[in-house]
Image (cartoon, rainbow, N blue to C red; front, side, top):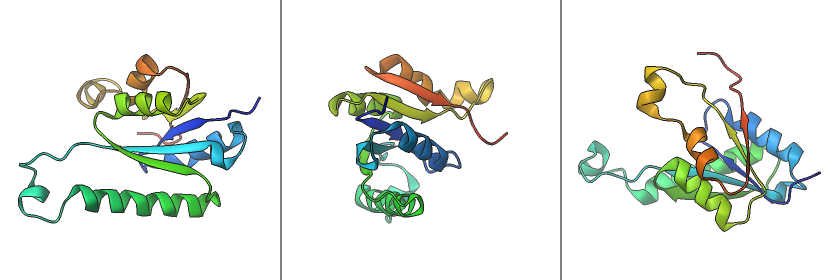
Length: 143
């Protein structure tokens, strides 16, 4: 049974393309896929902000370019894309709820131990807060 609204959080890592391909197999069409990338809020004392050159607008433009490149590589120009600012796990779950998603397809980076403690788990937070089904994909690379 094909899904009518699939959210795919993307961080442009090695697993991004395979996650979107999986979503394309599950969705009723490429226009039913919604990519979302979440930026952390800029801190006023961040070096890029203090010395100029890094702005919300420049970051958004860069992400939109990355979205365009991804859609071109996948030959899927009708995929929707969204940029959010905030806590990734919460923003992804909120976005999925706002658009009435049937499914979230998210890769797991598979961190454990100290690395997971420091970085947290976006996938885990999405699972806890999502109001729809969540498909967590295993990493395709090994670290």
